[in-house]
Length: 200
Image (cartoon, rainbow, N blue to C red; front, side, top):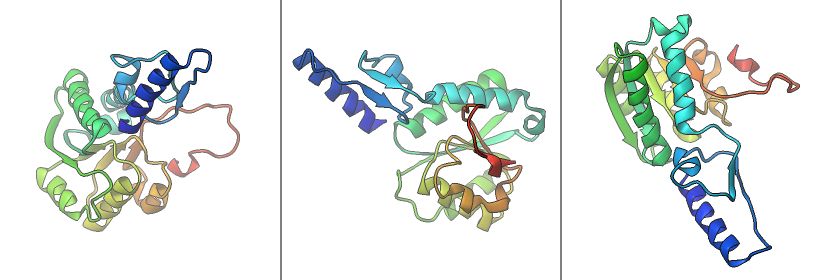
C-alpha cells in the first residue's frame, strides 16, 4: 500500500501536467481503504476488496459460521508493521467488539515486514496468551514462516488470514492446515480448473 500510495500521487501529478495523455493506475493488490475513501483518485481503480471489507466478511464468519464460532474465544493479532498490518489489527478489534463482544483480544504484535526469519518466539507468546485463534494479514515469507513455526511449535489454534494462497504458503501448510487455517477472499464461480481445491 505504501508503494501504491506513491503511485497514485505520481499518476495524479502526471495527469494534471499532461492533459490528453492521462494514465490509469489499475491496482490489483494494495488494499488500503483510504485509496477509495479519503485519498480517492479518479485515476485509480482497485480490483481487490480492501482491508476493512475483508475483515467485515471475516468478522461475520467468526460470528455466524457454526464450524468456527464456538471455537473462537481468545484472539491474538499478529501482523506486519506497515499500513495493511496496522489496519488488519484495527479493523479486527472494531469488528470483534461489534459482532462478537464475548471474544477477548489476548495479545497483539506488529513485527517488521519481511525481516523475521524465526517466528518461534511469537508462537511461544501466542501459546502463553491462551489464544485459540490468530488473526493475521501476513503474506509471503512472513505467513509461510509463521505457519511453519506454529506447526513446529505445536500450536493447534486456528488462523484467520488474508493471503494463505500466496505462493509457498500452501506447501508450508501441507495437511497441517486442514480445519485450522482460513482465508477471507472472493472468487468467481465460472472459472475453470480446480482453484482452491487444496483448502478442501
